Length: 213
Image 1 (cartoon, helix red, strand yellow):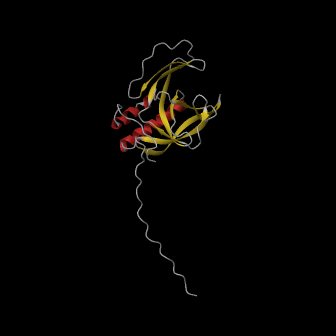
Image 2: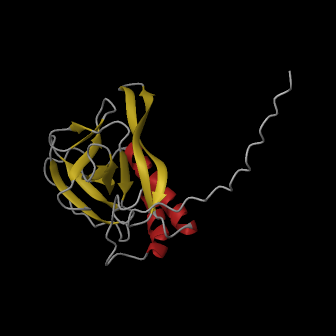
Image 3: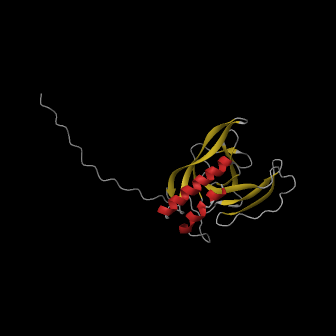
């Protein structure tokens, strides 16, 4: 899978320090400007962009390990009234009074960026941000997975994931869908996968002798 995705790390913390910063998200449970917004709809479908385009089933997405953010968001009646986000390497932003009209005041939000590297949306960059319990848990899970990967293999800190879902039954709202970022591979910041181990050559098959008639 060489050269499928290339994340720029110039000016960012070292990969060696990445694990410690990512583990901070466990205690709390932005990125690329202009990226489409990725979200899970109430019916469990993954969609992105203003047109709410459905994500292709089975498409592969690379999570940028340096893109994790945390902060606050204030929602009004279907619109964002205020948002304060910063890199996970920084403390949570300070907040003042919530903007007038905010339904729930300031809500804690986490997020990250992904790039499609396989499927009809290849090359698309998206931003995923969430305030839901299930969404924050999914971001926490992938952050911790990256931290564990970095602690054992700094050369390949980028998880390639499939966008999946789970659900649970809520007594008032019925079936509630939750996101899953299913890691299928780890690659380098340049997009190369680890070299596969070469299996030992199998001995030649012994020909079976045919019995004489």
